[in-house]
Image (cartoon, rainbow, N blue to C red; front, side, top):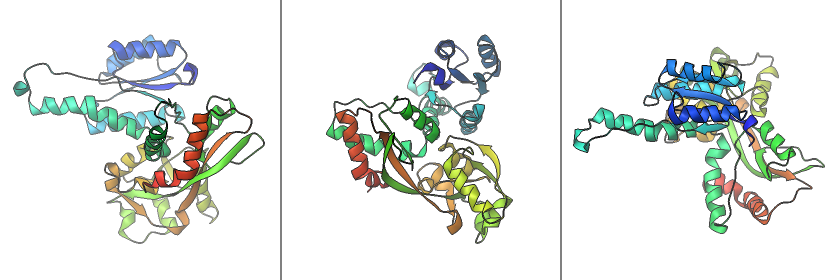
Length: 328
């Protein structure tokens, strides 16, 4: 990825290595979102980069707290309307001394900042396929070809399509794409997107109707995303207004955490419900009208050279993609 295309979130960016990295990325043309605890220090760091702008912003948050981590995820999703595509987990802390002299609060803070925050931020800022399909796919592929190096790009469909068109990637895995003279596509797997609420949401108190969904506010993907377009057509085709969108984000895995902690509703993969993190606090709002069955394709340029490794990975997706995604 070229620096000019980077939208990087850097934790621990108010000073030291984080601030220096932000400066270097910015000088190379990247946009940077600075994260740290000290708002004044962050503001000074941003001023050194020319101040808040389309390419520079900052978010003051304590990564040792649940609220602080949620604030960072929200800031990342709303930044410039397009979110981030690079995450630098730079923040860290230490507590020097004998173990029996370190109190429980200090130990909890060490783990929260050095372990929990990086894992939760990374998880929250990855799209659905990256979370559910990539780990088993990579595991299966590397068992067959342990010497191959993989490079992945995680982004929305339109960005992936532009990477493919420019020849920057061998192939993409995305929601169904239309075959053309330039692009070959093969169906890989299917998934269902549904309405999801927190487990104590009032919408679950009775059998919901479509019009009942309009009484609440939503967190949804941007209007350019096909899943949202389908969802809004469900309402418009029945003479109803679209849902009231309070938060718009392209960070799909941020949605379950937001939903579990608010009375917002969302429309995303059913697979988020029941997971061992925020998913245990989520419930599906069962409505036939708002259950979207969607297809994911692997697509590549018809005239492009595909290495043996790329061909092998595409073949693995076509033959085992469905079982890898479902965990069978």
